Amino acid sequence: MKKKLLTSMSLLVAVFLMASCLKGEDRDVTYYEDTAVTSFAIGTLKRTVHTKTKAGKDSTYRTKFNASKYAFYIDQTKREIYNPDSLPVGVDASKVIATIAGKSGGVIVLNMKKAGATKDSLVRYVSTDSLDFSRPREVRVYSNSGNNYRAYTVRVNVHKESPNVFNWTELTANASLGGLRGMKAVNTNGKIFVFGDDGTATVAYVTAMSDGNSWTLAGTQTFGREAYLNVCVMNNQLYILDNGALWQSSDGAAWTQVATPNVVRLIGSSGNKLYALNASKALVTSADGGTTWTEEQIDDQSTLLPTQDINLCTLPLKTNKNASRLILIGNRSATDYAADAAAAIWGKIEDTSTGAQSQPWAYYGTVGGGTYRLPRLQGMCVAGYNDGLLAVGGHGLGADKTQGFAAVYMSYDAGIVWRPDTAITIPSGFTTTATVFALTVDADNHVWMICGDRGRVWKGRLTQLGWRKEQNVFKE
Picture (tube, rainbow, N blue to C red):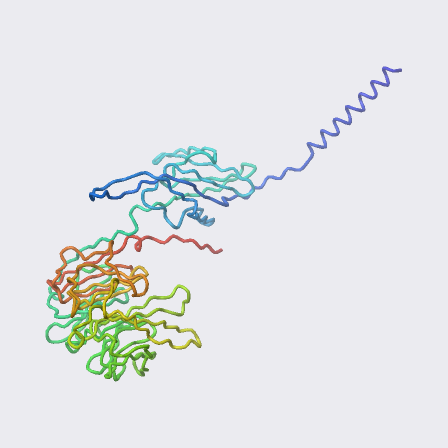
């Protein structure tokens, strides 16, 4: 009887245990079929830095570079992963520790196929492994079931050149430009225009922004010999003031007279308004293309306004899309103010927002000179460049004894402090005694310099201003 009882109890225990096991095996397991890479980041890399010794010799050294702050964007449509801000030149992308995550815990696999090979070489991703991203690499993320995967092309972008290198390219000299006795350069609609005095009238020569080797007459219409001093661009339209008449053109060939304003010098445009000096040497502005003019408010004497070598530059404000900082730079009369040792500089904020009040021009007070002044350069040309102001010019006027074309001057605080730039220099071969020259900056950030001596032309650009901007916003 005891044996039967023990046998029965053993069977009951076995059944209970089997039931428990079956219950455990019966739980639901969900395998997600959709998958994607959800994040990608890199850490500290090796970098080779090029420098110069005290003796001026080239030298290199190795250092560590923290690349974790460089964001990588994931384009799920094109299945691309890349850093829109390239890593600095010299970074070694062949040994990268990457952190990669997949949706729903998807399995990450790297395709380590060699260049030129036809067969895939798949390796499971391990977060501590050093990976070679010196060229585009395929990364796959598999679904939980292993039935589906999504492949991405990963690019770790590294700059091939230093950001602050500026190289000039000399273009074909042009005899017609070399014959001009005075000139001014502007750009619009993908073209570079040089207006100048050919000895009898103001004429205009034009070249494509992508060219610079071939120049042609823009048109047959001519203006007075000094009209080239009164040229500017507003809303892709050329304006020129000649003997009291204001003319407008979209191509420099066909001109239409738009007004007969009471102004004697057209000094430039902000993009929204024209600016000029009237017969009383007061600063005036027009918001309707030159038909009506209003005198501007200034915070100092009008005798401190520049009357020659005048440049008007517009620097958009990053904090207000409707506002810009206007910088008026030039020289006072070399005859009347021989004691001046620096350029005359004024500035104001122009705000086109609804209800915004007009602000007065502020005088920077630099004509007396100073450590970081802008020299009083003959024929001075100034243009906005690299979020700053760039200036070049000939020999110093009056009390300024600066050598002509000794340096390219830059200001990164809207014209207050000026220093000779270390990256941008005067192009080799530029005639330092030149009195006829012009400068402009095109839409692709190329600086153009034209020298009246033999009509030589150069253009150049900071490397960083020519770098391609990667997409970093994606919309469905």
